Length: 64
Image (tube, rainbow, N blue to C red; front, side, top):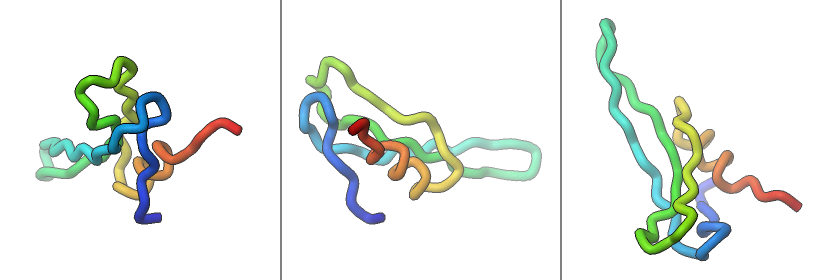
């Protein structure tokens, strides 16, 4: 799954966020996807996931 769907509210481009975390054993990353349009009134964003593809899958899910 390489394609990220646009924002379901404004149609803006989705952005992948990468957060670096530190713990006693070193650094690791968490990924999230959200609306990149700063004028979007909803500004939806997924939770943080261990893998980038999990965040993308979470973002691309849409109610039928």
